[in-house]
Image 1 (cartoon, rainbow, N blue to C red):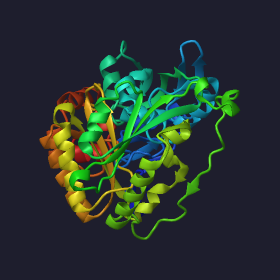
Image 2 (cartoon, helix red, strand yellow; image 1 turned 180 degrees about the horizontal axis):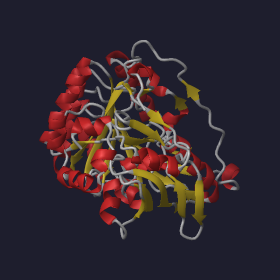
Image 3 (tube, one colour; image 1 turned 90 degrees about the vertical axis):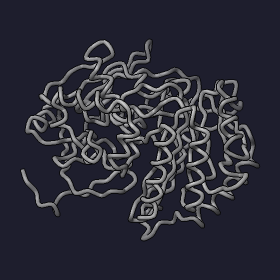
Image 4 (cartoon, one colour; image 1 turned 90 degrees about the horizontal axis):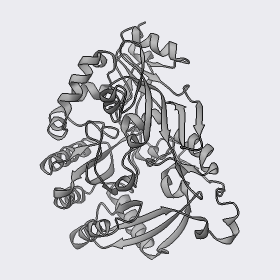
Length: 449
């Protein structure tokens, strides 16, 4: 089947940069998906399009798995959930939090698919305690390049299983998975806030708070001088019934109705610029430093605050934005983070939400987390932003770090190859299994994966 380029759908990730015209298929059954693979197209799986760049579009077509959205089975004794890969995290939480179970690792949005969470090996605010999402995957069913479905686990097709977790869909199409959920006693989170005056104080606070399960910091990305990297660090735990006020203790899994706002239109130009970010950061830090240092939050507000503003990506304007997320190994993290923040502050570019997290030991391969610190920050897309991101790449490379493929929209191949270890093994497995020919994305072609 051929289509004129102008008739193809416009595909992008959450960052809305780049926008690519490419085929999009919506198979309704596994058989239909397998037939598309057997046709010999260069395909890539596409979930709910919450990755940020060009990893979920392919020259031969993106294959949407959103119709593979059924919960299949749940074992209350072990907490193991079996589901199709197109199930949204939001649906899992809605179904199982009221039953006293929580997904052990969640990213910053609940509108992602389970298959996407595996492919990106997503991490949360609790990586030091729980690792990445892949650590909680019991097995997965993978539609491979030969059109056959293989059940992969640490004990069965273990090399393929390991490469698929964090492999960005480049080993095959994830159709089903089994994941292990954790028990919780309430739907609430107990949070303590620590105010830090600069980056050194923030890192010290992270290192002094290993007992906390969830740790995440908002940074003022445009602060300078003695206040460089000033931040609000939130330390959190799942609340227990005794933590709840008497008024809700009898219904510990009932949370208030969520009010959501929505960005209804695309702004013609980005509302995120040096002036708006600097003004927002001054107010946010001042208000955050004055508010109560302990709080009780519904899990939705604690883990997914941005989901309360639907289509928030539209504030960056029609040109979209790029998120830069890197991880720096522990030994060089302090100096590397200072260098990154100085470059960002000097450029006067940044976002309202700049986030720092501490990672524990990673899984290796293409999985993003490594022991150290990860910084994530958005930039409205422009030629000037592109030059700044190249500068941030150089700093990341100098300090032994690498970027997150699920957020990447523009890294040059040469820079990526200097960052990422283990590419040779991943490429060899792709060649051996035939996935290099069948499963490609615009990102994989750009980076030579």
